[in-house]
Length: 130
Image (cartoon, rainbow, N blue to C red; front, side, top):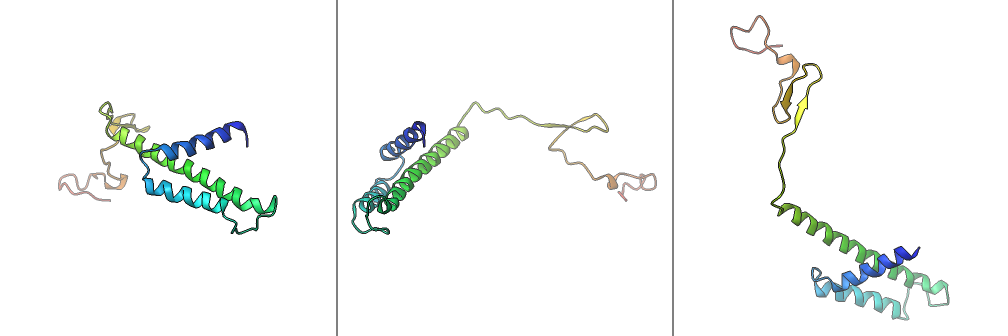
């Protein structure tokens, strides 16, 4: 893990804690669980030096990853809202160019399959056939 990853982890935790988009009760419960587990003498692995700290480090890493996940979700949802509320969006209509005829047709027009073309026998009746 380099300095950039460490800095990103710290900023995601601080952003999570200070975010107004996350309910206070969620912040309180997550932080209380993490700190309670790290400080508590009751662990999955007894607190013997080095080996016993592995589960505490894992819970801390989970907390950092969770904060990063939540902040990314909030950023994505706010970006989606900005796109939906943006008045500068321009609608365009795609055109499809058929290589056989070299004609331009809009993609929204539905073409009939090749076997529904009019034949010489049923042109007068207006029916379509194979």
